[in-house]
Length: 403
Image 1 (cartoon, rainbow, N blue to C red):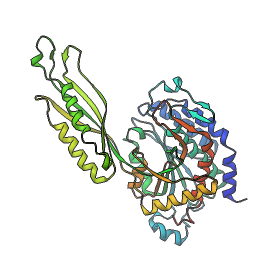
Image 2: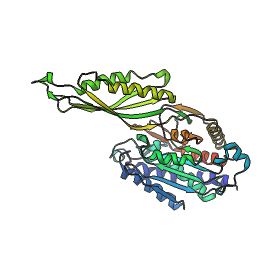
Image 3: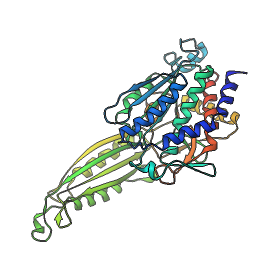
Image 4: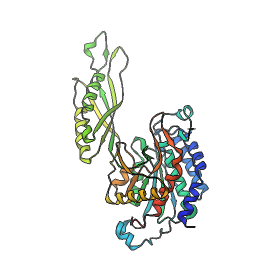
């Protein structure tokens, strides 16, 4: 039996173990600002990989979840890649790492895992982060374990498990980009689309905050002496939302607001948080300039405002090498027994960072799910094994695909 057959057969027998590991991860609160929770999910990952003899390096992070870097040696680890493959990839990338990437943080508040624990109904799993993207973490763990058990990886495998993707990877980005510089290819295990497709293009995005300063005054006794920061906030929101241009794929959304001192006080302060999405890199500069102009303008005389950038995602665009990787995955999926295609999404992901560093990247190769970031988030459990098998088969086909 070939290593390819051994890996596929072993993975086929791991469905129940995958579900058990997924249940354990989902039942841990791991919102982006809950470092202990994210690191607790990391401990589950480390334990599983350790049981399979896979070493894991912990890259400590100050504010957010630590990054984990698991490694599985490849038979080509000493640089014996064929010359033909080297020429196709470029000699600098010959024998470089095959990266399986995923994030452990979710968007849900503390207590959500208790209120809404992992459940299964009619073959569909539910729970906070079940698809986005704890199922992808499980898949990566089992693919790494399969190659550790049977070998045959054409180059070293790296499992990169980060902890702050949902807020733009403010700490994790540097770790991701460092890994991308030495990557041969990157598989990002965000959830497969409801259609069963993978993602070949994503928007870029910028998360921003702005704070407005006004002047407090009694709203009955000396209303005229006040300067309302909330009124200024309202006017800025209208101007910001007017920047949305759906035809160009540009959206601006103020998703969080707060402000004021009391109901009977003219508001001395207010603040909001902005989400910008764009498709073309040049659109980002134009939109950011327009946003800065709106924040800098005082619609209510006497107010002032400051803008700060909280996090940023880069767009995922398909290069010729990434198209080769996509074609390889589609072929591998068909050999496993399911059809897939590529699609574009307005959502952002860490795959934009790896693509921007020049690493051929394919996103959303994880198990299939949907309704992420909502109480209705779900995962198709019957996709766990096939998506793991397809990822493994694509890895084994890299040489043949001249990647």
